[in-house]
Length: 179
Image (cartoon, rainbow, N blue to C red):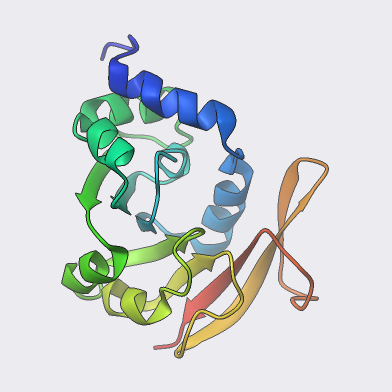
């Protein structure tokens, strides 16, 4: 597979060069949850979940994301260069408001929903999450039907996941969907 930069690849890498690098967060969450299929609500151009998880569906209304993900092959090439798993990355993009898109996804088909910019998506995410699935959120209020399981802390540029002292401020919170 060619590793040449395409206009879409440059769009992703330009964004990633300016954005917070969350690969450490995603790796900690992956190790904790064992998730394989992921939905990222309001993803913008953050393709780094595909460095950690082999099957990621990105959801956003942003025009830049629509244009960049129109050529998913460029996102796959970028993920393939940085992935931490065996096999080919599977990347899909669904344009639209996350509540509508999550509501239209197949029931109980995903292991993890990422919501770092979307606000409380718990109610919409519950439908597409498998029983016992996970939600990674920036906020502490995921909605009904979730139990706080872990916090992702950021200190000196390193992420770590903790399961005690969950009342502290964190870079992200991991919730388990109650079956």
